[in-house]
Image 1 (spheres, rainbow, N blue to C red):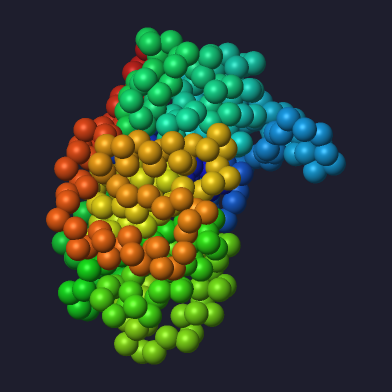
Image 2: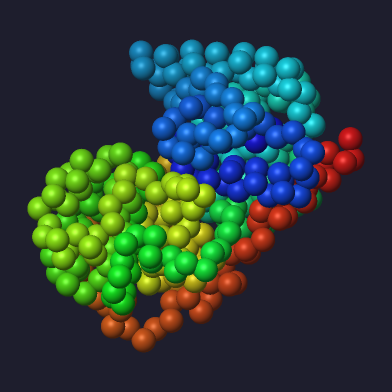
Amino acid sequence: MLVGGGTGGHAAPILAIFQNLSKREPNLKIHVVGVGSGEEKYFFSKISNYHTIKSGKLHRYLTLKNLAEATKFVSGIVESMILIKKIKPKVIFSKGGHVSLPVITAAKFLKVPYFIHESDIEMGKTNKMMSGSAKKVFVSFPLKYYPGIESDKIIWTGPVLRADDSVSKPSRSYFGFDNDKPVIFLTGGSQGSLALTTALIGVMDKLLLKYDLIHQAGKHSIEVSKQFESTLNETDRKSYYLAEFLANENGIDMMWEAIKAADLVVTRAGSTIAEVAVLKKPMILIPWKHAAQNHQLKNANYLVDNGAASMINEDDLSPELLLEKIEANFSSNKDHTSSYKELFPSDGVKVICDNIIKEIEDK
């Protein structure tokens, strides 16, 4: 049983694990559990054993809204126990997020072994709660950032990367670019970032003179992005590819292709940065200042401190500063990508699947 979803950052790794296990062990029956969000369905819609449960986000303070969330959480535990008893999984792999907590709570009660993976340098609240009883804890960043976890159960796997089913067609051609301008990929994640989009729109006229732009706007800024796109002339539209969410289209993972096509990635500092780093792409990071435990800033500092990226604090973000950072990236001779190989292992999917298969074989 593979558990995770809600956002693309949780769903994409689950799909990668699913695909690897399916390829290596065709007779293995794999179930995927999520919450049924729109972003999640982009990844799981073709999986026959895909289940959804209710899941609320727990908070430490009491309000009517949080009481409703707690009710959904309890309901999620009941649903998870029924599902686990029906499926009888040999092992559960959890990617974290609020959907994982009721499932793992039920798994602990029913004594089903489970593994977890942490994408960020600061372990999330759910994964912290689950790590104590986990058989294995896989992490994206070096082990020193996760004190308190038993050394015999923690493994530095690096990120869970999407499957790279490379094809001969150049990545940039998927986005309709028919020139040789450098490509910038800007994303605020599957939810999107109005702050990033606003800054981008402020300098779009200058950027499109020199660059092709792939823009994953997300649900929070897709409408304002569409309104702006409608004002572009025909020439500029050919250099601007806009999507609410880059998903699998006709067997092509458009998010992965966008990263491959990019000469520069402008992004938040969530789970995407490890994928970008493994592909050795220069980055400008704009950490989300409201991220839990400020984990995005900590993720970004790891890359910046190792000379692998530049950063703009969200409070400082402006169209002018964004343009300045982009121009500096293309005019600089510094190779930000030289140390990427040492920053993140690139075989995380294999290592995790090795452990899952071994757990099943040992039973």
